[in-house]
Length: 421
Length: 165
Ligand code: SF4
Image (cartoon, rainbow over all chains, first blue to last red):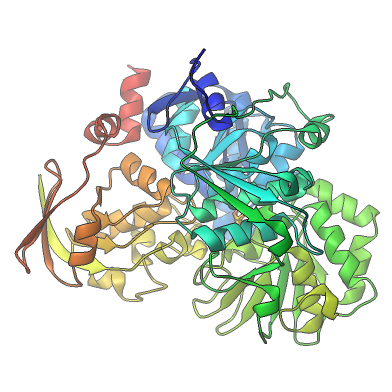
């Protein structure tokens, strides 16, 4: 019998042909999937060429997703996206999506069933940690890591220690995965889980839908975490049922698995959260936000651009008008979500409220296009980062919140809660 | 090998959007990335740096995105080594992978101030503050990382491992 392990250790052990791996150990893991986007792939392809191997080792395990600057915002963005397309054709990489079929990588890949429970995944994008919501090990790396993985199908990693986060009790109204993770980052800080695995559990997490779980794992990197992870249950398996391209493997932490620390939260005390500029850890409960007028509200991104998020926004915006001083920009994360929003009548609600609805793209989340802030402007957004200049001018500000708070704020013209509209 | 240059001091949680804002991610050109390095905090940074200079950060240096453009921009700007109290993990591995020397040393991170003259002995992990006459020892790299570093980065290391003739 090997010693007790966490779910993260077990998945990593299985991917280096072992029964047991120890936190701190350096290992080389076999990857089930590796991804890069229109920003990180161009640099990676430059490095891949230097390795001198002609073919990608496992083309079917590669995903190339143009999402950050598409539909191409200018010629240079177009050139970068073109590199991905050419490489996908040349190397016979099946997982490449043109505009109109794809979307934001971290929402798209689980939707396509390319990531399943028990997988080991790397991505040249920091929010690759999102797939932990399926009970997979997934982590963000750089372009050179991706280049090497194209050649070998493997990646070097240090086995992380785990922190166990237990969320007890029931969620209050308008509190979701976004609030739990913002509150957590607020408590432990932006380096509170540096190099560590963040394992989320407890009855409030079990009660979350898959969208809320993706949101939580998505922001593990915002606490410095290597990966976020939630053990699979019926909700996880139901989500994968008609999607998974491979069979999910369910792992769970042993009851006596080792944790660097355990942190418990009483969810009855957690209000909707708002992260003030310029760090995601700068959180305040909605009741203590005060008077913060806004110029823009953005609902979208790999954090909160899922259909569940759009439904929540629509619930608040139905029959209401966006404040005259505010631009509301709503961006579905993928084509599938876009279509669902059309079919469910959500788009009409958004347009009638005076918002704009965009095709899937990262867009303003990283200050790319589709809603860049001018000097001194202030936005509330369902995205994941509020660093200096993240959405535009270095003297602009981003406040992070959940879709309900963001939609309500768009109506109020200042940061506020659904109860106030 | 000894590195020598002046210190450029920054605080805690220097994120990758500060190091290189996303609007410049539409290029892989090292010169262009270098020209916009640290723009959000210090508009004239790229002009001030002299080859060999040292960047000093506080806690969690390089947090945020996985963009390798960040260490590439720092390296191409002429910075010979980044010293910090701690590094965000993706930045750290990117730096190792592309051959930008990084040193974890909370003491040096506190002690060194803007403009001081620094000398670094990479192999020995020694950081000397020539202005103040103090000396600090950085944490040693684990043997596995040493291998990548001595191969000259991950690409060279991978070349060896895949043994492409
Ligand atoms: S939506 Fe934002 S955080 Fe997510 S992948 Fe795109 S740029 Fe990154």
